[in-house]
Length: 327
Image 1 (cartoon, rainbow, N blue to C red):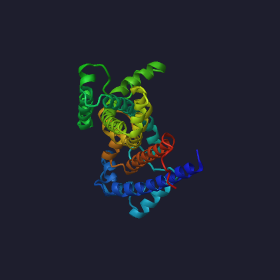
Image 2 (image 1 turned 180 degrees about the vertical axis):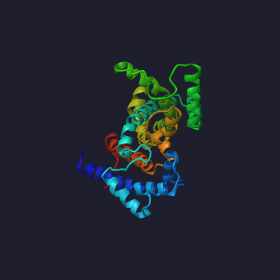
Image 3 (image 1 turned 90 degrees about the vertical axis):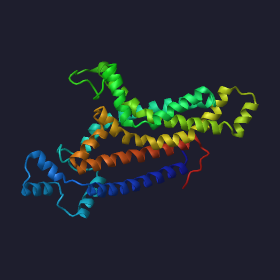
């Protein structure tokens, strides 16, 4: 790794931190602009609605302070990774998010690998059979999955494979009350993971397939590919050594951008399949008007997007050394 690359990555990291600061401030005002009063929600759950109790709740959580002071306290604590307390669970927001994070990382990681591998493979097959029936079939299937709403696909998959065929469990991360350990526990989690991961990954599979197909067709028309063919190289070697390597650059960019977007899709998927991740946690916090928890989940999700973008930039440096790094 050269000094220029180190400065490039350092500059990207500084820009990412500035982006996170702007996002944190924007989310703070966005959440406060939403209708609803968390003090009234908590008072309603406690069965007390008198004004004195509401005032005590607002003082306890700092909701009676001016908005600018609440922002200052929030940003100051955020720098120390202190995201406050949840209004309902009465525990640190950071601890609750970290408790749910492994489930989300497992789901999104499995969905990402599934979509990337299957999408690239489908794109390569479609490009190799350009203007043939297999190319048309893959393109049509990709369009269908791309156009299908994620929540509808999740519900239909649950009805078909869980309710009707009874092949896979329909909700949760593990069998309730089974108390499994070892390989039995891993197999049980894997069975619960199949439906949500495949459902979440199918949309992105269609995107990668179309991107890979288009990129490979365009790359295959370039002069260096024609030269390789003229030298007598086998079609398979030309495809995988010359075409695919160069065609993967836009796919890597897209994968880096969409890796963070999987969190957004996980909100719907985790809600439908009752997967105990931060996507479902975000959904629950929204209805509970839990400001601190919502802000914490939004910030962590944004940080993951920035991190994935930074990783993509680093991968670019090694995949294609010809790329000119900005100072």
